[in-house]
Image (tube, rainbow, N blue to C red; front, side, top):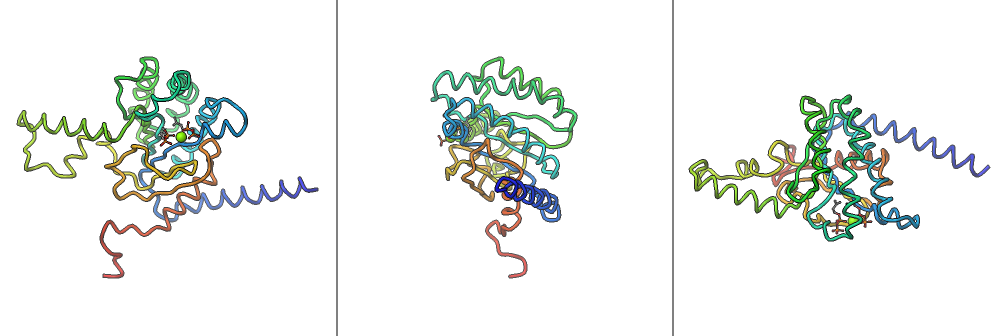
Length: 263
Ligand code: IPE
Ligand code: IPE
Ligand code: MG
């Protein structure tokens, strides 16, 4: 009896989530959503599984959220998959994480091609193993003519390193007469970043209850709306994604100004 009641409640809830998800398009949809996918290790530990089992489960979640983002007409989804600091982890975990793009793209690339998704990557390519880069490059190439959702993986990405590299590049261009120092402004500097083809994120989501940026898109997040959840990444689904977008739609973005009706 109790189980039936539970089942019924769950059904009600899932219908409710579907309905709420459908309603989202009636309000402004964030153009660029960035996600710090955190909590895979804790998800596994809670189940007495090795941490890597959490990473594997998290991969399915990437597929789930990509589909939903595409359905909503979101233009770009940037996913923090591996930070420049994640090399500090045990070798076995790092190796597992570096195999995930191959597995993910090996399974889902045909679907991504079919669904008009464009795969992109940002991060320092130098230290990424060739087998990982090969899988990513293949996906970028296979989806380069698509013009739907941009699925941008932040892989071996660190924001401070990105900013420093951009500064080096700017200095070099000034020295070589390609850029006039007086012309340098925020807009031009942005074109030196790894995100040059993307607009700044409108919404940042971080799962697992951590309230920090962990060296993620420090420049680009200057005016982004933040949404944090206790939910661990492998448990993140339609309900949580809907909740995040609803929260975004309830925010008042002023960019330092005042709301037009107050003027
Ligand atoms: C996020 O999950 C995935 C990566 C950082 C690669 P974690 O592995 O950080 O999971 P927790 O934070 O230890 O639970
Ligand atoms: C941030 O998560 C990096 C990714 C999600 C890829 P971490 O788990 O590495 O961050 P910290 O160490 O808790 O700040
Ligand atoms: Mg973590």
